[in-house]
Image (cartoon, rainbow, N blue to C red):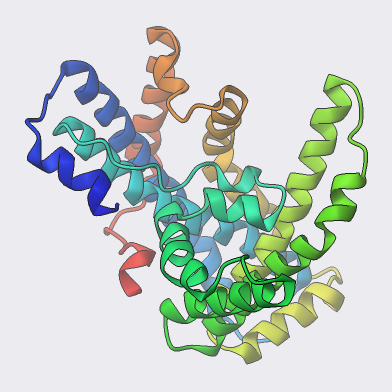
Length: 308
């Protein structure tokens, strides 16, 4: 958080209420669920695929990318929710860092929802000082490319991170180029058709994000090219691969997450479940606690973000 947002809360006398403590506890429990149940269990699906050598099977790579997309989201958002929850318990209001990013339909919206503290820093201390969008189209594209390249390199001195930053910058530039055409496309009329159209756009862009996650997660560019080759041509049937079991495991570890996020999106409120009647909220809490007790990953896996 910026000093102007956080320091006044430190200086001013804090008021800790029971309601804020309940809200904070809700966020801590949800964050623990995201990290220990979703992210750490999905890591057991993702790691064997990325630790294996080529050739890669297309369906297996695709499922591993789906799993990693939710692993990295829940790993990052999990610690953010725990921090926000603990802050509320002590009288601090900490910014939302992940605002349902996989409901984005374009790269601009994605970076307004994903890792908001980092994307805000990149905007305020790189993009705007470089000139932002004030000096014409070509310089705007240059500023976007430089900002995202540095954002990728910030994660580590690896070509995969540089490629990820370049990919994200390319998506932002292409979206700006195509925005006049996209805006001219008439949206379907009617509530149902409008929702279907929105879902199609979100699903399409989610797959573009997953291509980026391949660059981010891969151990080398050689592995990136080998996995992309598998995605393109390696779709033959292989009885040795338990594809159905892999898909069911991903569904098992994400169904509650997806359901809650759909509710949060429909209400435009990340605290939507907290505002449910006590019996409905209690069922969710019971499901979370039982999930953590029965299938929560043991061993205390490190947060992904600790490596940056």
